[in-house]
Amino acid sequence: MLAWAFGSIFLALAGVVTVETIARKAFNISLQGADELGGYALAVGCTIAFSLALMGRNHIRVDVFHERMPRRVQAFLNWFSIASMAAFGIFMAWVATKVLADTLAYGSTAQTPWATPLVWPQSVWYAGLVIFALVGTGLALRATVLLASGRLDVLNQDFHPKSAKEELKEELDDLAVRQSTEGAKP
Image (tube, rainbow, N blue to C red; front, side, top):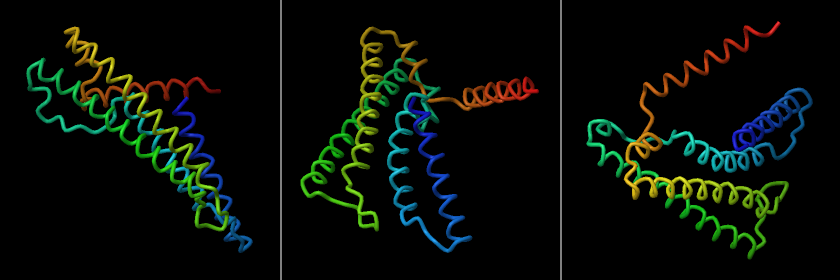
């Protein structure tokens, strides 16, 4: 659902920018706000992407020595990585709570022709950060249970950084699916 929301936000933004560009070039008029909507789309889209990347193990980690370390060290580093990410998500959601509270207290509006009440886009941005914090916390709890129960192989399998081989396999699998889908079309 998050991927669909992410894609829909940016497809809608692409449509608005297209209409704005055509209106400016062909009719010399502007919608007055495509850039404002673009900023909101990026803020919300980024928070959704945080969760998607976390679930897909796509966050960048320096793993030059990871595979060469003992299994127990790998497990601890994998646990520490996801626990740190959860703590970061919780921190970001907490800071966003403060930002949203200030926006509500001051009745802040955007400094644009639309004068959008900032509580609306910030609420969606905040919801995305809360989702990221919840996803991170859920994964960290799972990793903690695996570590505490000594299931290090499962922990390492589910939380290790993606290797170049894994990424290549995913891309090749995706390519095969796309090619089979294209071949099935009349």
